[in-house]
Length: 179
Ligand SMILES: Nc1ncnc2c1ncn2[C@@H]1O[C@H](COP(=O)(O)OP(=O)(O)OP(=O)(O)O)[C@@H](O)[C@H]1O
Ligand SMILES: [Mg+2]
Image (cartoon, rainbow, N blue to C red; front, side, top):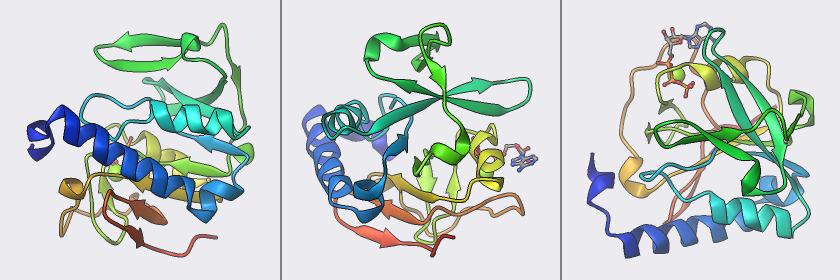
């Protein structure tokens, strides 16, 4: 994967560009509650985005996965200390110190993925967690990704739901008009 070849400096610079672009995006500005994942090493840095949300007075909710049902429960965090490492480098909200937030309260869902097409289709991490969640989610969606994560095509299945927008270090891509 090309992502692994990025230098630490490039990673920080590009992640910063993407964060600044997100901060200027209408869907983000309007959102009172933002759903986002805790980035792993090869993903656009989200901790600085989460800190920006907190500074702006937005609610930040992060997913707790239920592997049996392949569902996600988004829980509000106000500090990184409310996270716990579930396995490898995956961090999730501690269910004891965080409260669950209903789907209807999420104004903007930032959808993770490994690669994306300009049409907003993606390959995720293979659990179908987001595909299932998106089935009954009606508000705004977008993804943040490095240019190297853009591909011409991904295999599309009937359950795949494209995101509304993709933000990269170079541009904003409008994929589809939501709701
Ligand atoms: N809405 C759905 N209902 C039932 N099964 C689904 C649904 N979405 C995905 N699946 C199943 O879940 C598995 C993983 O799906 P897929 O490969 O699309 O995951 P992904 O998009 O990489 O993951 P994620 O959505 O968490 O980012 C597949 O076997 C798929 O058939
Ligand atoms: Mg999918």
